Length: 306
Image (cartoon, rainbow, N blue to C red; front, side):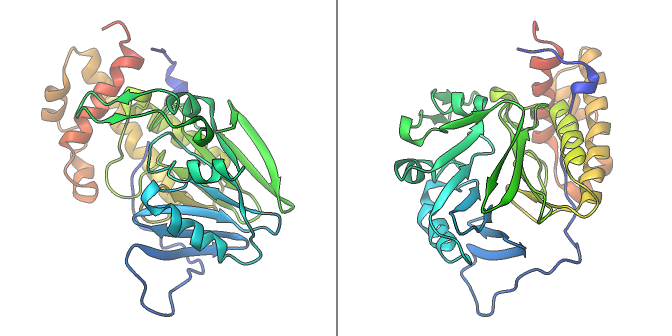
């Protein structure tokens, strides 16, 4: 496991997204599993079965950020086919390896699309992963469904004449392959599950995520965004830049408290008893499990030999 300096560390929380932006409202009643969140220029955001999917509509082929679970692949592709000026989906980003982000990989991989992800995400998708806390197993994806274009740091590409910037959230808030995708013209930043706007976040410490990474990850995303950027998490309400800053402040406090407990020789249950999130619980919800997981996530980074 790796050891990082304090400046390499990295957070997430939620308020709502009263952004003063033109949100698209359905003209007729829709199934609860699908709803439009917003359109900015050629960038569209829709929630399908609780997951936020971002699309860039372009005449030379649409681009999607995260493909949702495999059970929703048809619904997502159906929606993408209705976007203005969009043809076939030619590019797909995976912001991490989890199945709720990679459900379109097989379909689009077989169709010859470019699937882009951080190299760590590709590597997890070649391996069998078993989570130790619940025994859930994830089989490797077939080769055609794995990312066929990977990156390590920051890169860009052009889709329909529009520049798209993407990069690694290298502090590792959720997994060690977390990625963001930024659309500068529309000023929309897709962040996957590196940020949560719906209660306490899920830290997959088994594949590299950690509480320090939440703090550092938010620092990275704040450096990419600006005061007018619309932030799209993997699920839940859209966020403003000010809300992202508030999350950074909150998780920085929590991280410092948990690190202090670790260095004092405490364990996960003692961390829960210390109430390190107490002033945030009214807004965020019951925190015992989050605190246990966040504390365990410190072991690999701050006490790798423990």
